[in-house]
Length: 196
Image (cartoon, rainbow, N blue to C red; front, side, top):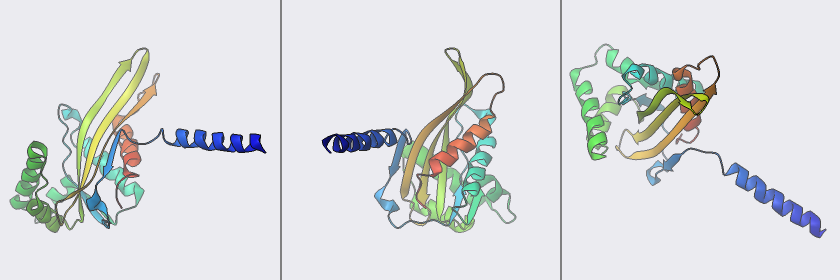
């Protein structure tokens, strides 16, 4: 009986330690997320930094991953939003000003987020930044590497409700995995942790 109890306790502790190894590099659900269940979301233009070749591609990969999850009744890319008939300069200016304030001041402007949410008919804004987008060699191993930072804001209040950062590195020998596919897999993985 004693051996059986020790075996069960050790098995439980081992299982607990193994399950604790997964997850994202950085993941914070803020208190403002309590009771926040967005049905419609708009993905703002992705900040690609020095990876200009990813412009537009990464935006679509993120949108596709969210659509496949089927958690939101409506997922809109910024590109789609800006190309809709009747979209005006006011929306473009609001998106640009919002992203600049968020990047430079770390301030999610509630007035601008309400304006963007109202025009796009979205409950939440998704702000994505690209940290890695390249093929590299780590020792003798070839790797396709994509890293993302994602923030979600409540469009009505401007409050940030979720932030996460993660990297996905897929090893390959001969055939390179497409970076958009790696980004889509990474977004799906990260989306499991977002408020819904």
